[in-house]
Length: 222
Image (cartoon, rainbow, N blue to C red; front, side, top):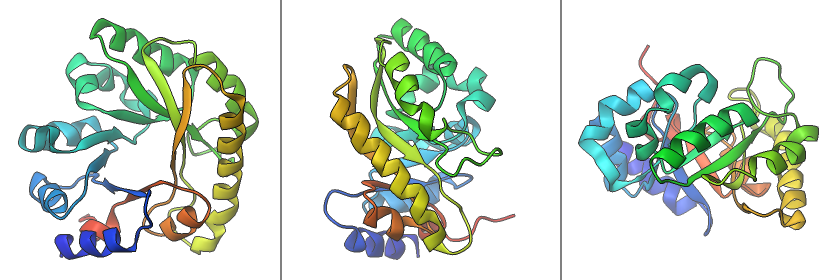
C-alpha cells in the first residue's frame, strides 16, 4: 500500500515540487518502503522517533525536523542529532536559532532552516506572526552557522481544504517579499506548505515542499 501511495503521489506532483514523508510514529520498515518507492525527504516531529528509525535508515534520505524545537530543545541540540538533520523547518525565534547556531558551530556545520509562519494567527500553534517575519529573518540572518532557505506554514489539518488557501496565499506573499529584499545569508528557495488534507491547494499557491503522512502511510494507530 505504501509503495502504491508514494508512486501515485509522485506522478501527481508537478515538476519542482518535492514530496516529504511526514513519518511521525512510523516504523523503520514503513519508512523504508516509502524510500524504495521514491521518497527522498523524511520529516520527523520527535527526536525519539528519529532515534528508533535512523540506525536502520541512515543517510539514504534527507532528514527534516518538523516538530516544535522549544519542546525538544534538550534532545535537538545534541551533537549527534544535529548531525542527522539536513534541515530544520520550524524556526520561529531568535533564541532557538542562536542555540542551534552555537551548537552547529561546535560541530562545523551550517544548518539550513525554514522560518515557520503562524499564518492563521492561531494562539495554540507555533510560528512567528506574519508582521514580524522580516524583523526575525534579519536578526537570524546574522548568524554564521544557520542558513535561511525559505518559509514553512501549517494550515488547518482537518476540515475543508479550501479553508487553508488564505494561509497559503499570505505565506507566499511574505516569501516573495523577503526574496526581493536580497538579505545576506537568506535564500528564499523552499516554501513548505500543505499536508495530506491540503497539499493540492498549497501547490496551487506556490508550495514546492509538501509534507504528507496519512496519504502515504495510512491513519496512525492509536
